[in-house]
Length: 412
Image (tube, rainbow, N blue to C red):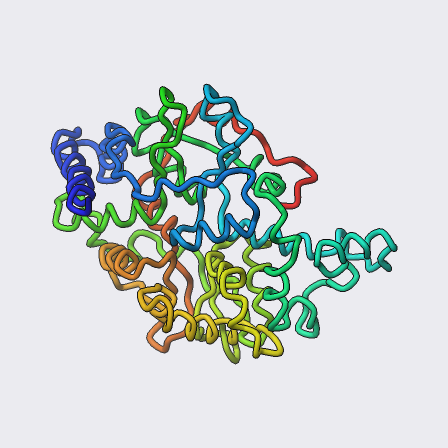
């Protein structure tokens, strides 16, 4: 199976190589790459081995267990009420993510408005029945809040009836109406790459219209792995040997970087990610110029799968979170990317070197530092893909017309 995957990845690189040689000489290298990827269908992309789906009547606890056991961050949600002959759009509710489940839970723990109010008898009763604190007990997060930052909070939460009985379909508002775009097997690589970069999609389902199901899911990480396998090919070397500074990376500078201090509650990190719509934040010390580690949205899984590791902490700070997770992984998963520590690079390194590092370490981002180790910015997988292709004028046409907008009142 591994050899077959490698052959398909190498085959894609070779297809680009063949197309590269026949492109018009007047095209610049970026235009050539666009033209090459436009001529390769997404059906050529190696299939992911997971094939894991979650039923809509699964509980949050069961969904988390499925994702954790299979070491995946997201999975399609199958509508158990859909008829057997349903089309793919009716068969699936969307794609639920590990982080999405955790963020939804945290949202339910927040008051509906900044105005504090005394809980009514009904509110207190409902909160008590669900095994959750009332909204009055869960104020806007600050370092003084002990209620949801105490070491035993998530241990209590994952033991609650609320967590065990809430179904995945009950939280569909957190993903059902988010853009659930899927590509057909005949769509092009260029379309897929643009959706993963410019349009900020983390993964793209590839559907088989005949069978009415999803037969592949292409992620940003999978694209980076494919590029790493293209090392040595002419088209890749002509692009990959450029320095990061030459192609405009990092796009996020030091002044734009969202950070969390080591002494702040770890939930502040996750809330900042949600508010700023970023996938990770560096944990900084002192004046904020240097980082001791990184917390990404995917790391929220450790609050749900191993809540007992924080039990001895009075407060789960960002630093305590990193220490507890590292200690846990050293015992249970020595190959985890989180054990790699703070991964950095400099702007004089090449895009090829960066791709190879990200792929080998299986990480989503790298922080750019100067010669003194001070933070200068960050580079994500999406940033790299965005430098590979560009969107031609009018390329998508009415492609997005069928995508339902996010409901105005949805707290996603």
